[in-house]
Image (cartoon, rainbow, N blue to C red):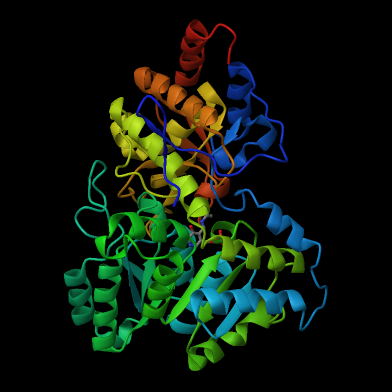
Length: 483
Ligand code: F0G
């Protein structure tokens, strides 16, 4: 099992267990050009052009590095509308890894959410979960339902040593079912590697408790396994019962506890695509007819056969500890150093990325001036690093048009798997530290153009004062080369 490797100084350093064989050139623009680029992008990092970005830490979605084996598999892709051998290979991998006899391919994770919520969620239903993901919430609401987040008290505490912040609070779950009635709860949703609270795992002990509650009331359990690999890594390293267990066993225990699992292939398999899997034929049949309608025929579901081949290989690579530990070890390295320097960052380190606490970072920026968005713009200006706002901008307004302050106000710095080297991670650490020293210079943002749904994707904003120019001038003083 790979973990950080001991150097002769005694320090443990995460070591890449892969080598770089294809590279992409990066640009590190001077600070003034970065300011122009973010102005053009309406201070929304989603609208930056990648050519202007030095380290793209927006997401791990579709940006993980593929392995040579994945690339090689694409050469044998079998082009057929129906009955492709590529699909059969993917199906066999799904059955082998998840133990689910029935599988529906879809074009990406939110397509799975669309189908599941269209089939199971009715008007006035409530779907309890550990925490929402943006697309999950939007699809459940589109179907007329709403979500209830039943996280534990530890989940939103920025600095914590609690190993399983992704757990569901079982007492809250029982209370919700009692209050709403089991007929209005179509399923409970558990998200592995809970994304929006900092890539935090749940324990298998907690999942077993959730299952018991579901069984008691006859409610389905739906598991989002997009970030399964990270959750498995943390179960194996943090939950005593599983310290010696192999990855395959842990995955099977988790999948056996769920009625339906679904995933974004953009995360779990380092490919595009997604899928829904179940052991239950009845549930499968309920969902099956929507796949040809919205996605494509049942043996491709909107994916190309090349993606399907690479997905089968990528899913099997999830069984390799070297593979699934790489990103969490790099994240821990970055998080522990930022934390030691006093930078407000979510602890313990989770999966997916390092999550800066924008409220702690910029306490002088009111929440309705979008501190996480402002921090994202500021970090890009001074470093060329692109993060993702995961705070109030990522919440849409309520029915009365009011902003909905997010419970956590985060800037996510994703570490896609096998993509960055340790010196790049050190650059991130250095520039985040510099910005923290000069945080007083960062001000708030306001919308100039605001879509109604998922506004964070294409909404445009502007600074509420001329803080960006002062920040650039201060950066120039310390870095005369401008970068
Ligand atoms: N579920 C989780 C836990 C996710 O993180 C995502 C996507 C989805 C579902 C939707 O999958 O993008 O393939 O449609 N997360 C990406 C992110 C977008 O940046 O964290 P998708």
